[in-house]
Length: 421
Image 1 (spheres, helix red, strand yellow):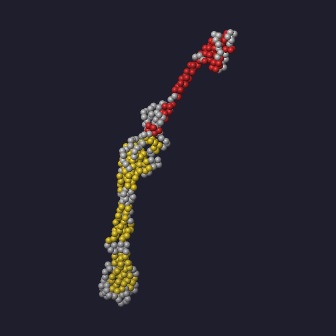
Image 2 (cartoon, one colour):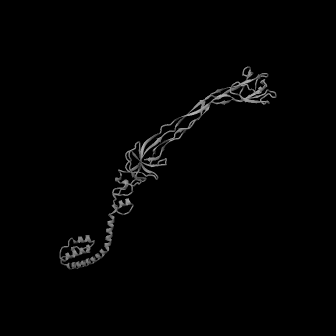
């Protein structure tokens, strides 16, 4: 290959040899070859033609040498040129390669379109540089949502209606949700039957005071106070003259025979309030990319359905899915009331024991209090043959001693927690 310098020198020599003007050639040589001076003013038409010819031959020789050098240089430059060409070829690929690298995680390989965008595989399937939800192709059916926590399932929930599942969702389930139902209200009522009485007790006689003069006298005997009727079965009556008035007596405190009390419970169970709805589960558990950190590309819900996640056996929602709906397929209602207990209010008023002179509780009499203290029967010389116990019942009735308590609860059957955005 002849270099530019060699070609210019040959041209200049040719012009001088032929006697042709060389004006203008110097500028070309100077501008092209950087410092070579070959202006015609240094070569007069006659005087210096031989010198010009010599220079021309020298230029030709230099040109031949340059040709050889250029040939050798060319053989060395070819691999470099090829390498440069290869480098240029590689540098033309980044547009597709970068897109494929973004899709595949590869570096430098050209993107190979795989058809329309698959919105849940984290790849740029159509090689437009946009992955999953970042690609407008996904927008009609997919959206960015918070990540689905481990153990939860992407779900769609309709509150208040039960339409067909939206596209991409299946496993429809008719549910009731958001149950409210207070405990049963229990009212205890006490009922009384029969009558209370205060006619039972014990009386102890001490005497006649043959040996002593108090209730420690030898010869004491006890008997029942009876049932309020006149009693003639006095101790020592077998002697036929009754007990002398100088005897002593102790009458125990009266024992109450209560009326009967029973309790009944009035139960009121408040209504259980729920909302009907429907729950569907995502047909695929796969989610894609193209979203901000903490979010994934998931199937979009539509119509009455909200975007949610679902799980059984839990009671609280993830922080990123905060709207809680307790759902189930039905109700189990065990709300009831326990029993109540009632007791009598009756008490015995002051009680007395009256001793009478004859056998039918008539004639002269003397009364002692039933207070379990020791009392003298009467003045000396007075005999008694009968007696009667008397006490009045006070405040007869019944009252509640333990109220009825609510039991059981209302709950959802086949419960499942659904949490929405």
